[in-house]
Amino acid sequence: MPDAFVLIVDDKFSVTRLVSEYLESKGFEVAIAHNGTQALTEARIHHPDVILLDVMMPHMDGFQFIETYRKESSTPIILLTAKIEETDKVFGLELGADDYITKPFSLAELVARIHAVLRRSQGALHTAETIQYLDLSIDPEKFEVIKKGSLIVLTPTEFKILLALAEKPGRVFSRSQLLQKAQGDVFETSEKTVNVHIRNLRMKIEDDPESPKFIETVFGVGYRFTEGAR
Image 1 (cartoon, rainbow, N blue to C red):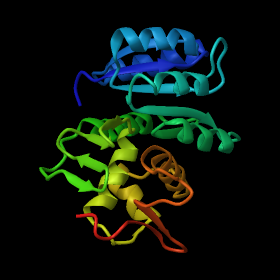
Image 2 (image 1 turned 90 degrees about the vertical axis):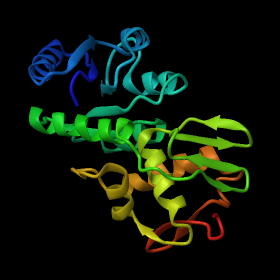
Image 3 (image 1 turned 60 degrees about the vertical axis):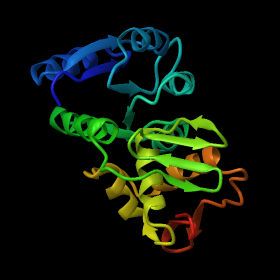
Image 4 (image 1 turned 135 degrees about the vertical axis):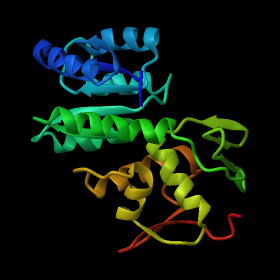
């Protein structure tokens, strides 16, 4: 995707320099920030297409950045994590990150990840009618979800998972199938991350996330959208 704008957020100057030079050589526009506070300023100015976000940073860490920025934008966020930070990966996804890549990573894989999240967020969805069930409306054309007349902000991954389920009410999808629907190219991402995205969706669209009326769990198999939704 030519001319996509990437914001790189990492407190290590060697990392931001290496990544920025490589991305620029591949045709991306790039901005750099070295802490979460600076990243907020850069994101508000440049409105990037994707954000590469380190977790451990001074003056506002990656988690604090996500909490703040997710109130303003659904821009895809890829976490840059260390192998020992498994809990950080899950926590970041819960806050609204779309993907993660483990350090050290190859620059070619990083570009592939960027292309994948850009396809999910910018790629044209197939033409389809709005899905309406009770007080929930899902519009594939506008990439919008409305609940009781209010817009629900979802990340691109959350939207793709919800749409995949809602288009086939009653059909059970395994976690791997939902990952494929949402991400296309599945890299190292664990199927367990689907549980995190489902939990996030329930928090956003269900009146009672502990007793969901839209997204049902089929124990030992996966998830389904309640039957009779269309």
